[in-house]
Image 1: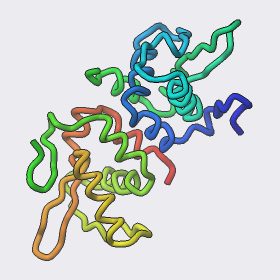
Image 2: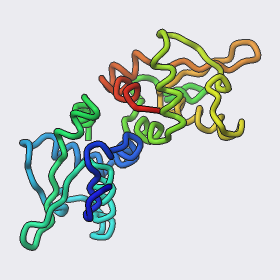
Image 3: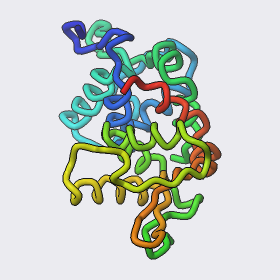
Image 4: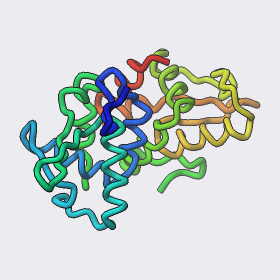
Length: 104
Length: 104
């Protein structure tokens, strides 16, 4: 069962949900940026500079979180997102490389 | 420009469209089956035994065709689908393996 923040455990991550989350170009850009950074990099939602409202931003990050692609944790007043790199690479080898190869 | 059947050329294939096509479980099952067969295997839409109407079947195959995942050609009275394996593997290495690994 996902935790109270909506993070599925590794064995709850479903390919269909991952692909649906990644069908959106803004969500792909978040994963592409995180995948290009050192493992464990934590960033705020706003640091990605996406041209959408705060409500839409929240929606996109929830889709990524509930799909199992990112983990979000509160640090002080900020909500930080990290890529679940090991889970994604283990379950779907090569997927992050495919995303990184896309021309933004 | 896609041909008159709606097949994009290799360099017109877009990751977003491919992922959106594959977010659907029935469409993934078609690609999973084709990927497991010898290269060049051609099958009718109905051979996949999908539990949907003919109109819905046509819709799903159009989504796969327009995404660039399959090629459809008429042979006599039948419309046959083949996987664009070389295009998909070249553009998105590992994607077919990820799809094949999914438990149906």
